[in-house]
Image 1 (tube, rainbow over the protein chains, first blue to last red):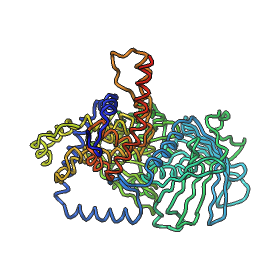
Image 2: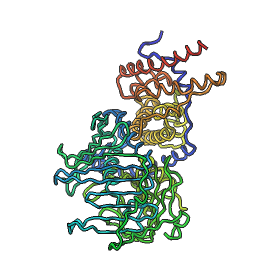
Image 3: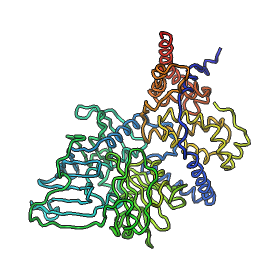
Image 4: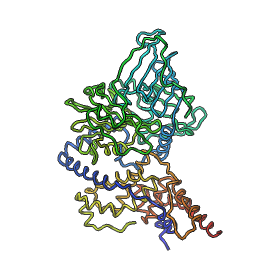
Length: 442
Length: 182
């Protein structure tokens, strides 16, 4: 007779053991050997400066506790609020953003402190094309990813009045860290909130009703801006429609008081945009201010000829991602916090897309200047990068840092002897390191 | 559950011997893969979680005091890595990726009918119940060790097992009845 407290169901156990399980991917053990070697090197460094390491760890721990950054993946994590629900909501959110071909709707932004409400009608598609109409009458911003041309028709914020001004930017970069398309509102402002929800490891989850529909609400703690703390919140509430997985309402709060809300409505997925929707038309005779950001679209094989070196290209990208654009600039604007880096030379920007998700791999010549993180959070926000030892690829042995922070684009950046390299976008921690570890000169 | 590992290999691995650690990984990898795959439902996520687990174990091994069984200790690290992976990404297990090993003596149409059913029933359980039934019934851990791995009281292991077995046995019984009717 079996011990009741240690009873096993042998028949069930045998059936469970008969279930198939896959072998590791072919490169698993090679990758593991590389990571263990890196760990041994890091371990030697740690033992060489135990007091410094302990002090740093303590400082980082205090800082993390003080500012409420979510736990790292190394933190023991058995306990925690409703992990399954949080993961499920985040899964729906990510799937909604990756499955669609285009998305249109209305975004309503309310600033509580100013008592203002602005509305934009928007259309986005998976190629990166954008059309925004609003907030004023006749105001339109478009971006055509196939040509790298952005156009705007807007009132002057400084001059006021009803006159419309016309501008065209050519040679626009595909995206960060270089100044990308003027699609700041939807992918960047809303995207930042959604990324914050996705990046947070332990968002609280509640089942709520939003405009009569079943929804989830993710409560994400975030870090107020250090320079202007009164202007940024300490909590984001992201409401996700349960049926579609789309974010429909974002509320940014500070100590329980609403600072601003973003509301998405009239959403339509996979409709056919009107012809020419992504190229605003200027009236005949309009005076157009023109500028060139310096990026040209080229086939990958021609990138080296323009940049002057063989660009780094990932051997592996996560399932579903495809190379959508290759843009090269001989020279472009400085990157980094408040543009504090040297002016960029020989930039190659590779844009990969999967639905509305995007990530970019960029390289630029290092030169003699001093570099900081090209994708750092804006002034006033503090990032806490993880040092990463990449065991393989062109970045093996390079100084690399990984940043997963609610206020920053998830990214990894590295300095080689000659290049400044970034991998940033809608990627998880392991995807970032895997992509970065597979970079090779081509 | 895997047999105990040669203590000399463990001692060498604790001193940072990478080859010894590789032996340790090989010794436990089958069971850990089974647990990770059934929790995560995807080979890439399984591999990501186990890479984290093995690196974490390699880092922590010099401090392993032997108070716990090595297997229990390693499974706990791997389970934590899987839970982190679930939290960080998704918990939806793609049912079409869950397959039972085909029995060549079974007629093809029965194999097709049975395929995926137990895997699907398992995948439908909450991850903590899934882990519990896999650890105890499939991998042979006793309740106390399973409780250590899952960081829950022994009684919680028992109640999770009751729930999981009730759901999965129903499926097994259905299959048996179906086979008898044929």
